[in-house]
Image (cartoon, rainbow, N blue to C red; front, side, top):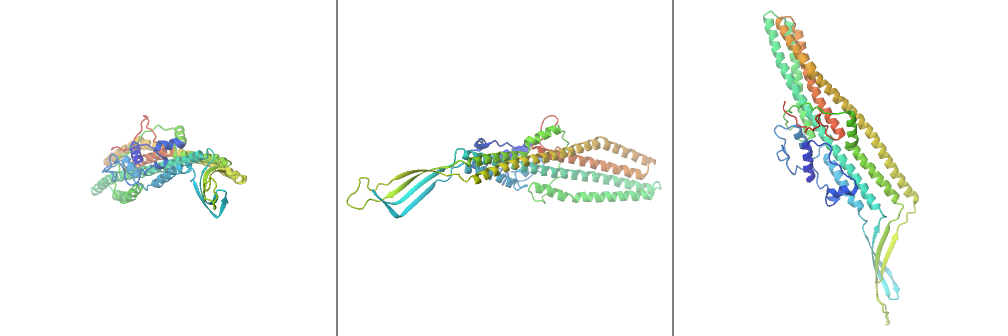
Amino acid sequence: MRLRAIMASAVSLGVFGGCDVGGGEDWFARQGPTPATAPARSPIARGPTAAPAGLAGGAELPTEPALADYLRYAALHDRNQGLEAAFNRWRAAVARVPQVKALPDPRFTYRYFIEQVETRVGAQRQSFGLSQTFPWFGKLAVRGDAAAAAARAEHQRYQARKLALFHDVKRAYYEYYYLAQAISVTEENVRLLKLLEGVARARYRADAGSHPDVIRAQVELGKLDDRLRALRELRGPITARLNAAMNRPIGAPLPWPKAVPPRPVAVTEGRLLAWLAEGNPELRAMDAEIARDEQRLALARKEYYPDITVGVDYIDTATTVGAAHPGDDGKDPVVATVSVNLPVWRDRLDAGVREARHRHLAALHEKAQKANALAADLKMALYRFRDADRKLALYRDILLPKARESFKVTRAAYRAGTAGFTDLIDAQRILLEFDLAAERALADRAGHLARLEMLVGREIPSENGTSSPDKPTTK
């Protein structure tokens, strides 16, 4: 339950990398009394233990949710993108550690003599034995280290699932934001075009304009009406996508998102690649798997050494038959035993070492291949982020002001009779396309930044060196 509150706090603070899981027994010692009790419960299952700020008991979104509220809601509700399954795989791996580190079960042996063995002190009737096997020195520790490394790998895969969930929520949120802006911009242009169509009608009635101008305005208005209708119908699928990412009913209503201000970030390719190598949870999971395979290789080499079994037997002996009884008549003997297995089948042992070595080499190569693939994905995501950032600056700072000025000038010229209605419609269409392109670039920039943060496993700081908690502000 404590893990759940920690995760909710991490989401609210914008933490992306998650906590590190140390090596071997020390990490499990920090988790609680025994590895089997930690983690005790999923941090995303069956509602929060403590309601985070902004959520009514952790069950519903606030009236005007921000992106951080969506992320918190998604993290606190199970079955999102396999997050619950990933957590339980981690929990199962942690519970495996005390199992492999424990001694084998002691063995109790009972023997009944079908034909009693006559001895000087009496007939032996039955025996009871108790024995315990002790693996060779270091075997249990190596098994525990291998299981701990496997648990660290599952923990990192859980972190990767969590980051993927946050990324999906962010992308859906940004698409929903763009849809809201596209509808708003298109509605404004519809109102503007209706005014222009009215002006064209008035000029035509006054013989100051032509009928084709009216037809042209009506055609453009019909096209904008169709675009606006399509955008409004897209709200259902977009909200369904966002609700699905948060494990809400896909038909649940969602308010329009708040503004998404472009966050300036200090990012270089070299720094991102370094963060990728040290913080990507998939690579860290592979590092843990490599450590696990190293321990398994060491364990395979220890199989050449025998295990030791010690025990004690108690034999039930009857008294002698006859008049003369020895002084130790009917005495029950106690026998101590020591035995070892003989690892003489070298072919089997050599094959086990070869198998462990090849699995270790395979894990090394798989990590190298995955690192290259992730580096390529990061480079592409960085290119797309920079391209969207460039387009946003281009449209917002250069093209949109020029398009607005061009529309004002063309409208004034049309009123003065020095420009045609076609020129006015073209200026209005360009203004609409540039406005939509600026909003598209803003949403794409935010989405590509979210993908970069998912790849590097951490939040990319702003240019001033501080972190931003992914909470949009009102424009």
